[in-house]
Length: 580
Image (cartoon, rainbow, N blue to C red):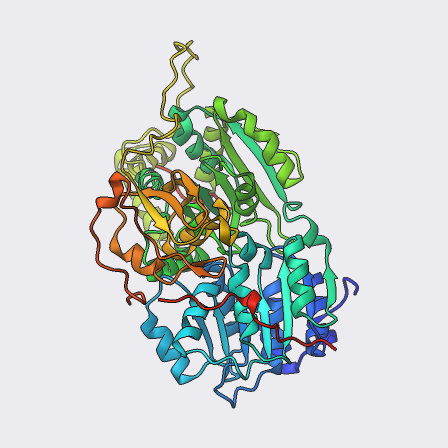
């Protein structure tokens, strides 16, 4: 395929091409140019593709064209590792299928079963969901996959990393033998290759330049800061950097609210995004970011998974991630689908040693940048002041104010420049316009704040028992991934994880609300329900809670103006797939 390839060349119906162009896309990305024709022919596909390369359209467009809107049966299933990605993919398919009559239904943990059950009962040709919730519906009998024609595994490597391998195989075993399968993954570890070999028939392998490195279009920089000046450094970055929208990462959900409030008090349009937000509030926040109603979002890693907003030109790692892989996922929120982006990471003296691992995992150098100086900030303020004057001259009320100013000048014999300056002062709200020079650096005593010391796990933490262990081949990362995804927890919520032969003890906040346990009721790791319960053998085990319910309830511009029984494991079943 050449760069001149258009959507007309891929075999798509004219009406579908018109929809794509109406959404603003003129030229297919490399992954689309290769995958769309292959999927339209009905063959299986294995695509090596990062997020942000256009892979959703690569499988969604052929899906929309091949399915029958006249039949209410579920004909396509997309599995995604997180609820955020499931929602994002379902929205994309809905936009591509506009006017066709196809119904798309997202099903994921953390959302009421009621709406999902109603949607499945009415009929949805396309279901997009997380493995755990899809299995719940299969167990209930509310999801029928007997007429499935197409199955997509999106971000397959992430699903395996989060411990969904057995779940995925269980779902595959419940699907018809003859179906089309598309598997997309950012990497190809042995587990993915085994999955493809077992369940795909003579797949076409697709690999694109974008899939090999997701950060090539992102300029990466790091800024030396101390704990006490991080907020000032951030506000200076906001004033000096030219961009559209910014995503700021912190480690804890409380930090999202605190930092968002501090920025709001300084005049920025900002919102927090964390696991405590109801899904409706999250969707509203993302919608505001997309529309430009807000320019800045402060988020945790878990809350930002699957976030895909074209306006994001900058990602700031306000808190450096402990996991280098999380860094790649963070900066992947910008510079998507061929666009350029900027990533800045704040680094305290104690965190310098982590820079090398960030460079290694991203595959690109991270350049040092200084904290913007008062002179640089003041120069940008002066530029914006001049621009605001120019823009005001085009305002419909300009002539009215001009007449008033001329009248005032004549009556009081005052120079026009003085009047203009007085009007500017009136609009400043008694705030100083220019930053003052930084005070001379003083040598500080060698006493360092101890807030980075390890948190005592006994403070505010309790021990919980999971009904999975070494016998089930689980790893700590699987525990964190499953609980964080299905329960809306964040990595900093986790304390010590001890994996025994048949069970696992995990330390979590002692004040977890019962709603979290409701959401985790059907969670599986390695195909087994975790049956999370307080550990009676530890002090935290005395916590009282109702018995687990079987199912959950139901510019360039500046960013803004400053101032039960388990089912048999899938591996015990004979796989049904298209061999021979």
